[in-house]
Amino acid sequence: MKNNPLHVFIVDDDKKVCDSLSNFFKLHDFEVNTYTSAQSYLDDLDRNYMGCLVSDIDMEDMTGLELQDSLNKIGCIRPTIFITGHANVNIAVEAMKLGALDFFEKPFDPDLLLTKVTDAINLFSEKIFILGCYNLLTQKEIEVFKLVISGDKNRSIADKLFISIPTVEAHRSKVMKKMKVKSVAELVRLSTLLNNNG
Image (cartoon, rainbow, N blue to C red; front, side):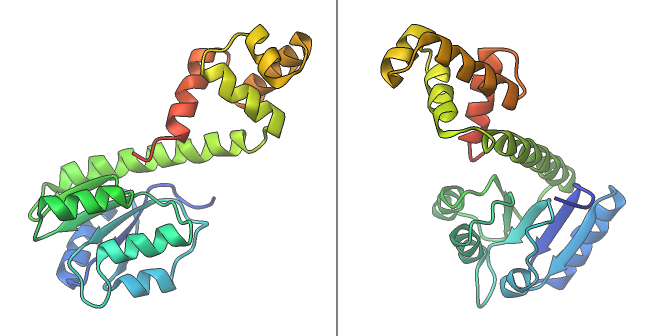
């Protein structure tokens, strides 16, 4: 990943909204990219850039929900916050099912949006770091990882994986080192973050 992590991508077919949000985020030291259509955002998509997507839902040609669905299909995991002028429960539920982190109805408090975007970026950055550590684990270490966070003791892990206790201890030590933690409680926390879409 490269660039200033405080980066927001704004998609709204109302140019006034794009310009207003762009100016607001720039005042708070964000890098900002604005798009007046979902397709233009997809055309310009660069996964090397971290940041948060703030997208309107009610757009012609491709809605915000359709944009999120397209991003999910290509495996782009940039966090998304939706804004809309016509909120209802069904749309909110659908947005969350697609993986949106939050949902704002216009008009909204820009300071609250700023807080949510910042939190989303921080969470995403941490998840990327954790995922990088997790991807260093071997298949056997992943099996040990899953049993450790489930509360299994070394004897139980050895029995379930048909390996010796010293081998379990060696794998367990490597898991803790690669995941950069010193306790099972920390390991459980990382596992929760890895499996949490919010």
